[in-house]
Length: 171
Image (tube, rainbow, N blue to C red; front, side):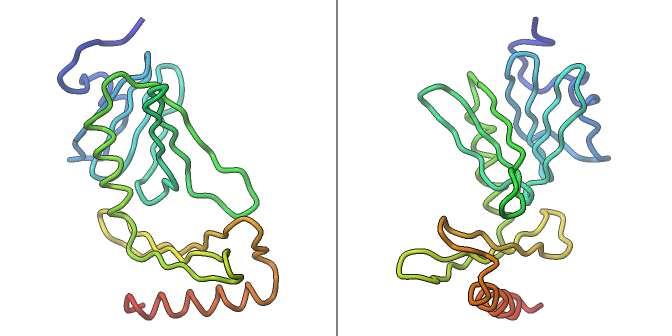
């Protein structure tokens, strides 16, 4: 049984369970059974009755992939190379506004993304992301399949690329 259905805005009970920050407003939402997905200016929030609320800052979302064939949204967190990333899958009936917000907010968190080749066809990216409310840039590397991030040449190239990227944004 769903908490609410056909709501024009996320119900107060759901907003309270989301534990939003003072002044933080729900900009878009969708429902997956009893779970509510809320998008705010700062985060993607999952409210699931009986479960801890999940709050993912936009800059901590690695990918959000929509499959129209089975109406699923898969959200993956930023992780460390070689370690599995937390991911969540939701089945949604009317996700248009939430999907637009997710795309816009995740994209807006990227300050810089630059690719570098190590071989003819593979390499890594240097990515700098920042929270919508400001703060320092979080830097990361994303490696293509077949690239060993522990190879001394890759380590040197990645360090050099990071220095150049930071200089380009004035850090």
